[in-house]
Each structure stands twice: as structure tokens, then as C-alpha cells.
Amino acid sequence: MGPANMLNYDDFIWNKYKIGAWLKINDLSTNQPALKNPYYASKAGPALHYSTEDPDSRDSIYQDTSIQALQHRGVKLLSCHTAAEEQVRRLIAHQNLSQQPELIVKEMLAHTLPEVLVVASMVAAIALLQTDGRYSYITV
Image (cartoon, rainbow, N blue to C red; front, side, top):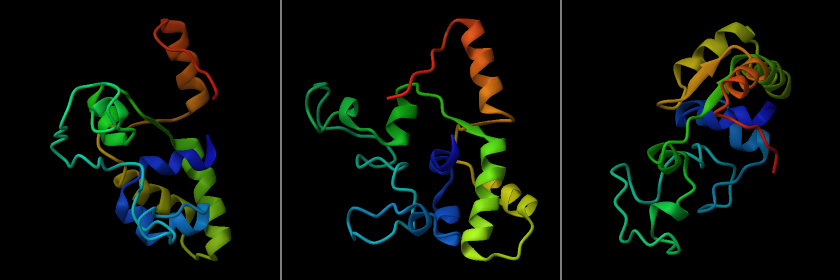
């Protein structure tokens, strides 16, 4: 899971800890390291107003790959607590921070995006979901 877990945090975390610079993710509008989570907000705005419902149109919800739009369509995001702890230790080393890892993890968890479910262990969560028969894990 690793760095992908960072997509689950809001703009405050992305700005404070310079996540874009750390993970080499640029803001497409400035071509500079992202100071906001570039995956969350929909271009259709918070109300998710689209000009068409044509699934083939770039202006429909079906072509909107933002987290906000995906959640609106029923996608559930999970955030791994174990991965957060691992990433925070790497972040501390990369940025020479003096804070204790537990405090940064606590802060990140307080800034988890809306409707993201934090699980203790992604490996265990996936196994439980698979046994329920409603989930299948694939890599792309």
C-alpha cells in the first residue's frame, strides 16, 4: 500500500508535510509539487454538477476520476493504519523532522478525507472482504 495511502489525507496534510514534493507529485495547473491533494476534488465542484450524463462525455460523472466523484458513485476507500505508520517514519527521515511518529500519525488520521475508513491492517481487511464474497483484489 505504501505511498498510495497518502491519497487519503486532506490538503492540510499535503501542505504541511509537502507530500507532493516528497512523492514527486506535481499540481497539473502549476507544474510544481502539489500542496493540495490533487486526487480529491472534482472539477465539477463540491455539488458535483455535470453538464451531461453521457458516459462517453468527458463532462460526465463517469469520466470524473476524482476521489470525490468516485465516492459519490459508491466507491469506498480504505486507509491502512499500518501503512500510515510506515510512511510517517519515512517522512520523518526524509524531512529530518523531530516529531514523534505517533503524533504525526494521529494528526494525519484527524485529517483523513471524508468517508475514508481507516483499518488497522489492509492485508487483514482485504482477507475479510474477500471471504464475504463482495470484494476482489486486483492490481493494474
